Image (cartoon, rainbow, N blue to C red):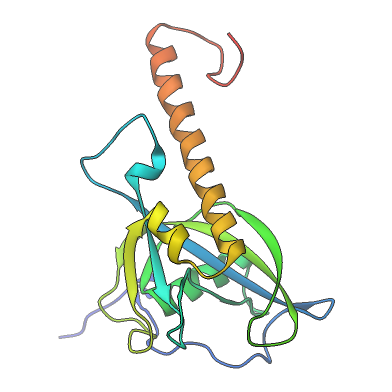
Length: 193
């Protein structure tokens, strides 16, 4: 018997390595990453999106601290493709990559150089049983508050804050449109009434 498997369902069990194919801009290594997130089931509230949200953090390869998945942006990828690849390799999850949360310049803790980092939200749709870096990293779902406390990079904490603000704004906008729609209001929920 032969099974046909769609390519999007296949995950390489080896991470890309080396920096010869990675992007640099004005001498700065370009890195991309994701904040994998999901909503708690059965705990929908209108008060605070951060209470409903869980994010996935991973241990650093050296085992010192926690962070969100990130790595080098390579020449054959878009930013979003690279961010998704890094998230699959390091955290073993995949899903829908959203719009860029921002761009940060930061100094590497291990190399005496500056990097430019781009972060994206990733709404997790699948958590893989096997992934390339499962033997060198731990992954942990936690609350936004816990993640902010354990994350070792200031710029990732800022990206997390932007994600929470974005999701909170979308929720408020969505809820307002539903309420306004029920009274046949034709103006956008974000416009002043």
